Image (cartoon, rainbow over all chains, first blue to last red; front, top):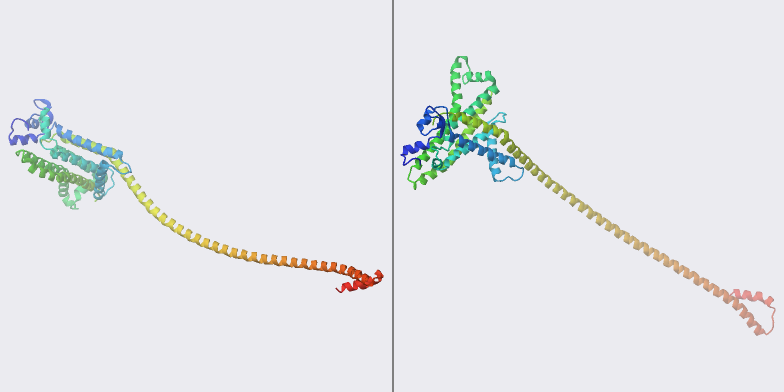
Length: 274
Length: 156
């Protein structure tokens, strides 16, 4: 635990604070040493831990799958290759059953989303004190290792998916077609165009929000519970921690799966003509 | 939990990872999997083809065996027939040869008998003349009685 005998509130706050590098109005570009400083930095700041861990997980994904892909032979597959192929086929089937257009980008996109989010979520089962404590000894104040408990990370990915939705809507339907779809569904009459537009724009904008916030909400809530459990006396922690961690094996996979499926479904809708 | 540049950073990271996956991760795995699928399908195909071939070959072998058995028995039968024929022929030949030998011997014997008779005839004539000379103790005109005696000898 950081500091000397922090109160539970301080402990929880500390564990939920990202390592922030930003342009502080007084200190200039520096690491934030408190939540207030981080807040004062405003938008021009970056969470080093979120970025670092998410890029690390992404790189791990790329390396693992690249390695398996390069070593892939038509012969009997090894363990790593088997695992990679299982995930690969799972995603391929998922895309084939959900996405009805022809777009070679969708399946790799889904694979990246699924494995990347799965890996980032999986960081959660590492006991909550390990990395903050380790980095505190190295002189780093904050270290929140699960990137998906940071809304910036989940919303960042959701915005990426949103951009693709807009791009493919415009590409497949054309600007006119997309505008027409927004104006004339669900009610196909001139009278209700403003109403339709309002409805459709909201539903369009809600897509990335629901994607990003669902993942963030689930992960963040789980993380808070882990931190709360960690406040118990050391001999009682495992009693709650173990069932919660086992439960989270399900949550971690499920949330990665939901994010992936919804992205594919949204992109599929973007490809469809009405 | 402030919204800040991390949002953009994460979007960029997302784009890069997706691009990398599309470019370098997806194609080799996909290719390998499809190749393996093809290979397995080919293997299964080959196996079924081979079993069909085996069946065919077995059938052919059976047929060949049956044919050769038939042929063998035919040949055996023919050989038996030929052997019987040869024995029959040999027997006939032997009989003919025997008959020929017997006939030859018989002719020879007859010839011998005739020659002996001839010899005897000539000798009988001279003996008779000698005998008659002795009996008559007189010289008889050989030329006059020769004819008579020759006639006598011919009657033998």
